Length: 445
Image (cartoon, rainbow, N blue to C red; front, side, top):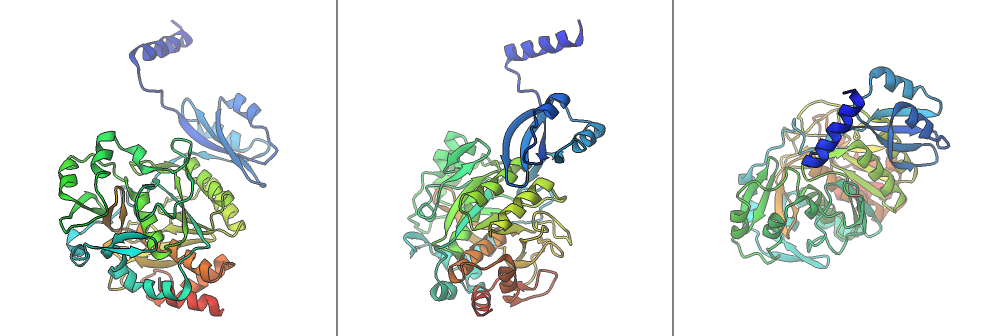
């Protein structure tokens, strides 16, 4: 039997046995705007998928039945009108990265757990420890909100795992986003990554707190504060590694800038992985749909031409981009935080020292508290979190406050303002986030 017949027979057998889809290799084809990719695709057996573009280039997600050879990749890159051809690689979120050293320490939450009542906060009732926690004191949050407003002119796009659209702390400030993992506009909900039984377990609680909540480690860097009945139901490890990450990031953006709008862009799955094409498309989407800030709590060890183009496009429209410096505890250059016009953010502890897990050096332009920080978690729960993702979220919120006080501030002006925060050393940028100092400097310069 020849190879074509064998292939057909194998495909027929897979249909009969309901085999999983054959693995494909994905790439991103980037061309000049007027180039028709069809002849190139036909020549090299590329299957064209989603496309996106700006005035300077066009891009397509493409797939092949098997990885292309180095020679073929070089030939495609050298074809007329092609700007770049790169692997559509998978990347982890900062705390989902296998090399992440961010470790939760439940005992550090003792002070916060004592504040178990609720308090009013800009149109909703939230856990008291969310508002009155050490991190908010360190960055002078309440003073800044009183002096400069609450960020109502800003829209923060969060490229992450989505959000809990029903969380009572967040629902009032959410605007429509997009789920790139399912190609669905709207809420970009994290709940779609869970099985129905786990959804029911997490979604049964209310925001009324009665002092019976228990901190439970659900992954390496997150301690979720759950009621006892939910703890019992979830005592089986049914939560994906990064589930809730987007809601936790959104909660800290909202904490710092309570009236800023939040646009959830779900490029990451519940296991913490995302494809490069989804991330790049999310950046273009944010820039084209009214975002003034983009928050990116992920990092990669090597640069991507397409992501660099996407971020340059966002910067050309005045969007301020903020990214995590990563959690490997190393002097390491990572992307997108090392790209031009991106604010890379490291993590500090409550003693204003670099967190042991935080990367430092060339990718870090500022820092913020990233240990034992209280934030929102799906199901009207709250969580204590550790990682540069959560420092990044606070800086994104800080940019929103700065835009409230000075709407036309450029990237360089924002960066300069953050450089006048609380001075620290340790290769963590010029200063740690201090809202009052930075916003006052922005207004006076």
